[in-house]
Length: 548
Image 1 (cartoon, rainbow, N blue to C red):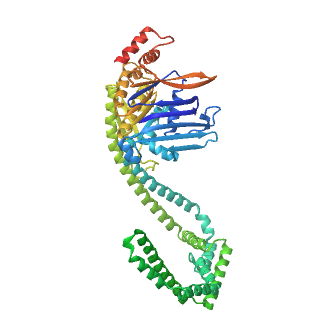
Image 2: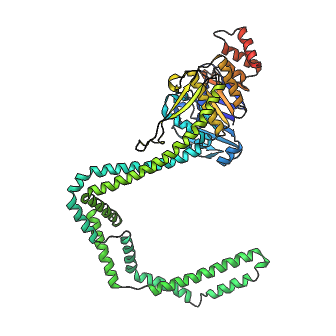
Image 3: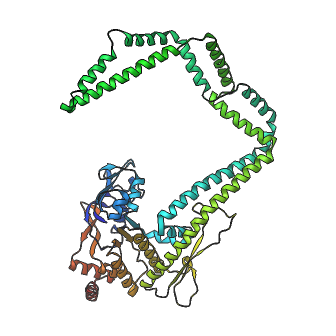
């Protein structure tokens, strides 16, 4: 849950410092007072993109800082302590600084963390219900881990399939060009094959030639090293004797044991060095014939590299590509058939994973249907029926980016009415209640501890507003809920009430926020019930709402 929010130099906000509590918190205020600005600042902590345009005029940077208390599930999942502080800073150059507990992190890491903490619903999010392509995402959210693993597997295989299709089309387009190059291809293949090219050969030749060119220097250096070991002044046996002497007293002092270990390692390291140097000397030999052969081979490789403008290793790869082209020219239909058959196999693999994802989505959709229907019944849509309809999947169909599925949300809002597309028949208030249900189910299903709604109750009034307020109050027992609202019923049901307002300070407008006590809440709710002027009736009604 969100415990503390600090906002500095963000749009109309100069310096806000707000403490939030568990339960239902109502944020109210006149249109244009800055409620959405406050939500925008909080959205920065949830990874939303922003720019220097939000920095308050005259300031060099904007800062948003939030303190969150994590539940046990979040602590274990994110491997973080019980309380964390997130900070987002934007300067005039557009540079972003993101911190977790004073340590810099990436925006993607910030999104990962906050996605497990809470969810922010903006005013425009309800429009997602007008786009059928988003419906599958709502189903996937019923079990993100399961569906995301399948989607990742599906997308990886799909990517390989699409690459195969591109390759197949490229082969067809190159047919004429390749056939015209047939003689030239044969010439280049024969020439390159005559050199018997191998990857890494030139590097090895250059190393061997360098050794032979520097034979005298290598021999001299090895002899010096060897004579050092064999000289009378250097005796490894003395080092070993020193080790044994210290070893005999190591039980009297831990430091003696450490010295003994160093002496022992030194003795064995020196012995190993002596053996290696002796071995190098025995193997070292100058073969003039071999030296000449190496140099002749290097000359040949350098010559062919210069001719083709490619390195030795690149020529090996180039030769393979020429052979592919020649095979394509010689047996175009057969080569094309192989590529096509490979793509068919890839398609079947992708389709198999997509089918498994579809089957899991069908199971999850049944669960979502039940939960949405129950929620709508509690939100003054007692006769509502909800069904998720999947388009049939058939082998050969297009492999879409997130799977094979296309779905439709069907709803009947009145008794006796047939199921119809949600986007076409639901009113603004009905869509708002549907989205509220979706987000609430998602939050509960994923053990989130924070839900933020920006006017999710738009288009709702009367007794329906009371039912929505009661549902928010019920959810807020388990999930901290911050609600920007114009409904007096919601404001009255809130455990905490904040008023957001705009005022002039030093000839500049600022957005401020204040916690309302009971008397102030009465006046605030009464103003929401009134038109131009506050009436006595509105005040009495506000009192009634607060006491309900």
